[in-house]
Image (tube, rainbow, N blue to C red):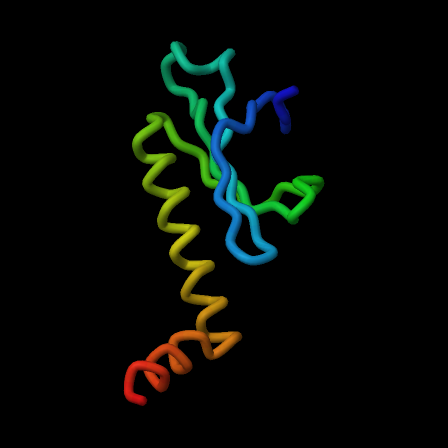
Length: 93
C-alpha cells in the first residue's frame, strides 16, 4: 500500500542514517495549470511526520531537490560524526 500525505503519494525516498527525504506526487494536480503537483519533505524514519515541504511544478525540479536535500543530510552527518575527517586519516596511514 502506498503512503499518502495530504493527497501526495510518496513516490521516492532517500534514507540517510536516521533521516528520510521523500518525493510526493499529487495525481489530481499533475495536468492542471498553476499547481504544484510535486513535493519533497523531510520525515522521520517511520514516515509519520512530514515537514519542511518544498513544492514544485515539474518532476525534474522535485527530483533535483530530493537529491540536493539528500546530499545536505550526508554533509550534515559527516560533520556530526567526523566521518569525513576519519576517512582522510585512514587514507594517510
